[in-house]
Image (cartoon, rainbow, N blue to C red; front, side):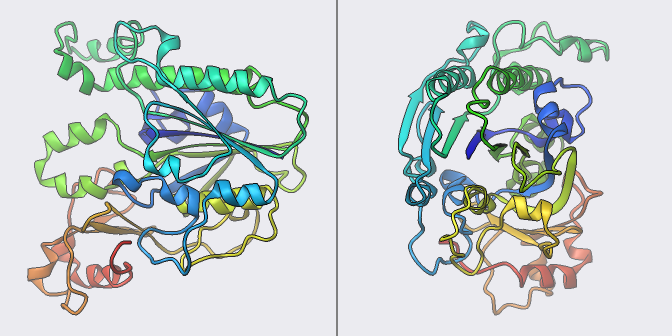
Amino acid sequence: MQAVIVSFDSLATNSLGCYGNEWIETPSFDQLAATGAVFDRHFLDTLGPMAGMAWSTGQHSLLPANSPPISIGSLLRTGNVESQLIAAGDLQCWQQSFEFDNVIRVHGREGIGTKPDEIPFAEVVKAAISERKQSTTTKQAKLLWVHAPGPGIPPEGFDALYFEDFEERGQDLSDLSDEERSRHPAVYAGSVSLLDHWLGELLAQGATDVVEEPLLVIVTAATGFGWQQIKQSKLNPASSKALTLGDQLTRIPLVLSVTRDARFPNLNSLRSDRLVQTCDLAPTLIDWFDLAHFTDQGPYPGRSWLRELTEDVPARSAVWYGDGLQTKAIRTNDWLCIQANAIDSQVDLSQSNQTNQTALFFKPEDIWDVNDIASQQPEVVAELLSQIPGKSR
């Protein structure tokens, strides 16, 4: 059994072709999606320094654990599954908590003066290919996790790759300041396409096709942040409250592919609209590596994405997430309700003096979270907020 996880600090979901983007070229993401499964409603667990922690523990940050969390690295090790992390830049606290058997830290550069093979994700991919080629004879079950920052300022050529699309609309991009360039969607698009190129290298040059073993590939991100958030906050300052936990930030890519495994034979070109979260990653790996000794921990354990796709299990009716401070949110198929401040659970949330502390958006129609209807739907607000767990850990 082999598993490869590709993750980014941030990646805007709607910047990928497999999520409906029609002008940014992402053939590698799209090809992986065409041969696997795409989750349209995948949400993070928490923002801030603890973002990604649920990847390791399978436990939700808004609920207390029944016992101390067990890292995914430690759990895999008990099942004789080797784990390795190859990451660019500083290793954040959630990465360190995984207890990988082996960690390789690489560096990279961004900006106009760099080369396409010097960006952080390129350095990660090159290291991953080198490491995997050295492991071609091993039969031991292994998890390879590669992690990099999200799209940044790409090298010359990629930075202006999509300028023509905007110049055709009469926009002159020749005199952009450094700040304007860093925030421009055309530059972000060029960086996404460069990430896509290196994802293609990872998938095509032997990094994932070691021995003829069943292989699971997962591509995801810790947050969905992109240029859209900056643009939208300037266009509509009143929406800044929503941007803290709005869909554009909390909805994150999740593409999953399985090859050479008779347990999951029909995962090609699937789309799932089930509500799933980052806390589901650990149970998915436990499921993949068939570690039968794993037991659900806590009142809100994660759920295997593989089972969500292949078994007739009840779908979640809601997911919750927070910013690690006071702001929390609940997302259902029809609503996004953001609790902007801590509110005493004894207070009647249907009162008008409380609804101004919340934001309510109708989904999926309100894509950008701009039409706050909390004051018009106090009963819906009260019902949704009553479902959000108490204090964060």
